[in-house]
Length: 111
Length: 137
Length: 248
Image (tube, rainbow over all chains, first blue to last red; front, side, top):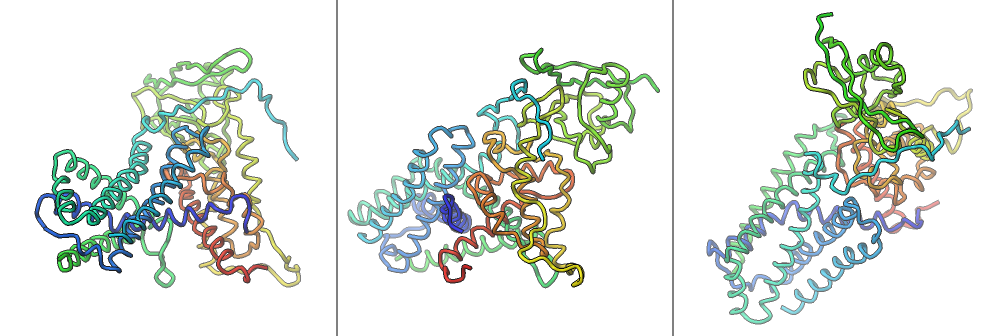
């Protein structure tokens, strides 16, 4: 089944997984990080982020929606007429998601 | 066999403007749905930077959290939250179309599938909130 | 006739004479039970015989009379004057297609794409006539029946902004019909459609705008067919990558 288009299902699969993670988990985290903590409704010291399974959770929470963004944004820019620079756009979008994955891995390992 | 084709040199080829998505309500809301992924991505980078502060010590972390209380950040997060909720709802509606569910022989109505997903979303959010409150330290 | 008239602003384009399409205004009698097609036929019969447009069955099954009515792709045999009257009605050829003349568009691209998905039953092994007919349960029929309702009217192509920006895109109706045959229990041709459906200009160009389903006059729901095709192709892809020994 492999052909010159063989990578599309892979990126779409990541896009879908990222979409599910974003849909179920991102709103509550925006409420926590964007409002509850800064406005003092809840206080924390951040030590929770050092627990190993919390790190695994955070890795999934942060990286998968990045692939969702990359795929969606790449196609949006195409739909807006930027097809001429399609290849560089793909590198920026998907490469950005990969860079974000590496950065997330590094931050979570080193905190 | 191919039938007769029109003389292509005399056809008029209309061009679609790049502002196509501003011309119709449904197209505009589609574009907003797509752009929600940008706000979600930016928020997750902010979250990552917040976690990173722990490397620099508890004072850095506390200072960063306090910094997020500025009006600029509050406005950003309010907009991001609206877009994130819009993503969630449109995602659950899409799920009911993409993955039809069957109970025995009958297909479960799409609105019910969407509603169940929304219910699960609220449930999961409460679980995350509860876990955070219990374990945050 | 009570003397009430409706005004239609109709696109005219004469190849070789006009550089660009222009609009021509016509006044037709207003009848409560008339559809836009009736008004166009009145124009052609009584006012301006040079107006060109396609139509046939006038009852929503042939798919010939698709045009833009006030910017919305519609079958003109199903668009009632009374839903617009007394406002003026703008009639334009289906967007996203080259214009041959007046309201007639070039549909050869769609026909090529339709053929490319092989919209017929493909068998690896034919059943002998003596063995009887292919049997199908009601559940098996249900799996694809709504996608058989497509009348090839191309309203979905006019509604799809991806097709507008990217003319190489296979498009809603062609993909829906490819899916219809893939889901037909009598068909064994999924692999032979894969190269076209699974190509970059196949299902993967679709960004699920959903307008195709909104305008479809036969409730085919092509958007659903496309997204479900993406799921099928992705499942097959992961299977072929993770379980390569399962391949023939």
